[in-house]
Length: 248
Ligand SMILES: [Mg+2]
Image (cartoon, rainbow, N blue to C red; front, side):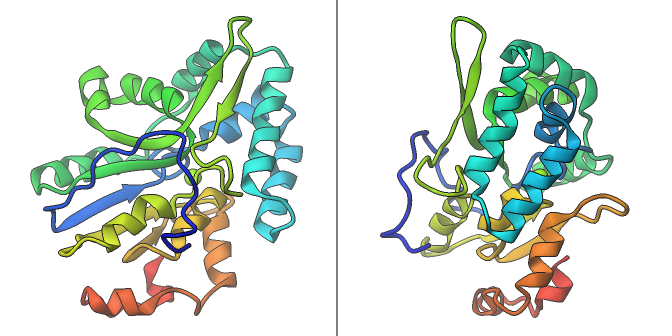
C-alpha cells in the first residue's frame, strides 16, 4: 500500500528505531508463542475449532476480510459470556513461549537489535501473557504494535482495530513501510506464521515463516501461492541474495 493509501491509525505507534542496523518485527500469536491465543479463545471459549478453521480458510481464499472474520470469532467468545479479565487469565494459564524465543530475545538485546511485537491480537492480552512468561519489568519494555480492546462496564468487550478502514484490521505493513522511507534504513526482519501476517509478508527485507510441522501454517501457504510476487528489489538493495523459497 502506498503512503497516500495508508489507513488512518486509531492507536499510536512507538517511535521508529532510526539509528539501528537491524530491527526485528515479529508476530506474536503462534510465532513467539507456542499457540495462537485468539485461536485458543475461539476454540475453547467461543464457537469452536471447526468454525474458526473455516473462517481462517475463508480469509486465506480472499472471500472475507481478516477484520470481519476475526471479529466474528472474538464476538463468539463474548456471546458465550466470557469477560475480558477471565480471557486474560485463561490465556495466562495456557499460552507459553516458543522454546527458542528467550535466547533469541537475549541475543537481540546484547547486540542492540530492537524487537517489536506486531500483532493482530489485543495489546492488553499480550502484555498479560508476557508478564506471566518473562516478568512484569521485561514485559513492560517490549514494544507492542497491536489492536486494543473496548471493555464495557457489564464485562462485555470487543476488539478495537488499529486500522478499522483496512480489511486487515491492523495492516502490519504500516509498521514496516516507515522504516523503508528512512535515509539510512535498518534491515527489517519480519517473523510470522499466519493469515494475519499476509499484510506484512511482501514488505520486510527478510521474511521468516515459522516452521510448524503438523500444524496449520497459513503464511507458508500464502507465500507458496504468491511466490514470485515478493519485492526482490529491496532484498538486493540490502545485499541479501535471497529468493522467496529461501525466506522460510
Ligand atoms: Mg500468528
